[in-house]
Amino acid sequence: MRSRDRDPEQLPLGGGLPDSEAVPPQADADADADAEDEDDGDSDHAPLAERLRPADLEDVVGQPHLTGEKGVFRRLLQSDRLPSIVLWGPPGTGKTTLARVLGTHPGYLWRQFSAVLSGVAQVRQAVAEAEARLTADGRRTLLFVDEIHRFNKSQQDAFLPHVEAGTITLLGATTENPSFHVNPALLSRCRVYVLRELDDEALRLLGQRALSRLDRDRETPLLLDETAWTPILRQAEGDARRLLVSLETLAQLAGRETVDADAVAALLQSGAARNLGAEDHFNWVSALQKSIRGSDPHAAVYWLTQMIEGGEDPRYVARRLVRTASEDIGLAEPGALQVALSARQAYEQLGSPEGHLALAQCAIYLALCPKSNSVTRAYGEAASRIKETGGRPVPNRLRNAPTALMKGLGYGRGYQYAHEVPEGFIPESFLPEGGEDEAYYAPGDQGREGRMVEDHRRRTHDFFKLGKRSTDDS
Image (cartoon, rainbow, N blue to C red; front, side):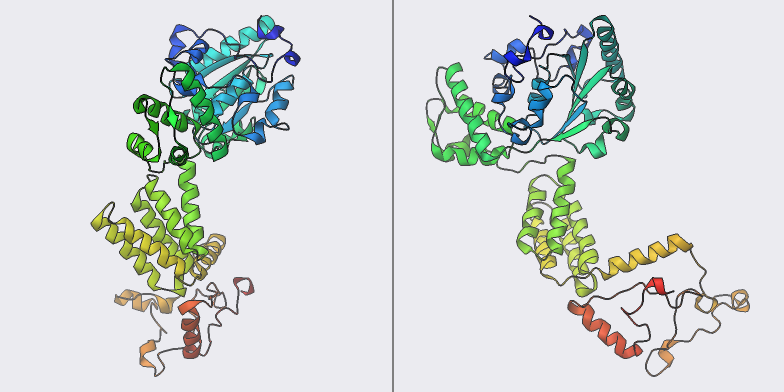
């Protein structure tokens, strides 16, 4: 019985397999690697992750905010129509699984292809088939596009008019932030649901299911000592697929031996953090700089280490430390910039892994330093004023006058050489004409900056009134 004849009240939510149309021969490559023909799900030759893939919502592990009793996916499966959706989350969190569960909706026919292998021609073919189907029997098409972020702008644009017209309902999956990787026009017509990394409880439940399946499929069961779970879960890092690959590998290599923590380390030999993608790149660097700004040396060295162990280029980390030294420490400890530059140079000379310690030393040092963003704010104030008024001419007395012609034009006339007066200071403004009362630098009072400003006020008799004026007064 085809899915349009089913009564959804008589089935579990998402029960059964997606009702799909045969994919034309030229589109065979479009099928995602982990979404093979449905019959393979029970085959011993299919990967463990595919054999365990749930067919209904009740069996999905993790994502309770989406699949729980009050989760939106339950309501979607009970509704008459599905909206276009983008599923965003790290690898191994169930994007394809949830997409296939939605594909069991009785009002839709499922069609899937991968953005890695497909192009505009395949999009047009899928849309033409969807139009024909909608005209022939009123059947809607749920088009699942895995790794939709890999489509370029023109490829994504090909979906837009057909999503807007309701010819297809788009279901995209991505590990990258859709704000940056999905066209705004297309994204505005989709609902975005965020999937989270699986916690240890969910991973352990999935692992127990995997052991039961391995016991059923193999003559020799996989025997796990309780101590083995800690390194297995740690290496999974919230990724269900990674967990299942580890368990399947252990089952292949362990034989009849009971696997403990030492055996896991010997057989899997993998402890490095994984780089989850561009989203984590930005999140990690944000966490590093905010930890330094917040004067937390523990967090500063942790995030720096996670970046490097996760595959981030240490040269990029070094550049961020240099930037942070100016942006967040600034004049509170002027030597911080030199320390950051020295750390960067040390890494260039030592390379990895020896140079990592120089970067870690710098991160901890910057976190310990007093903080000031007065340089950042001063630059921002000056940039805003220049954008507002345009560049203004340099007063004649401040101009360079290397030739007789320039001197004749008045360049340099009236300039007073400060070193020729006893106190080394002449009370005058050096700002453009008409802007003598503008102020951009508002000093902080932390670290050396406070002492430097007090000394400056004493030497200049507070002529510049540091911290007492604003650009709004001009």
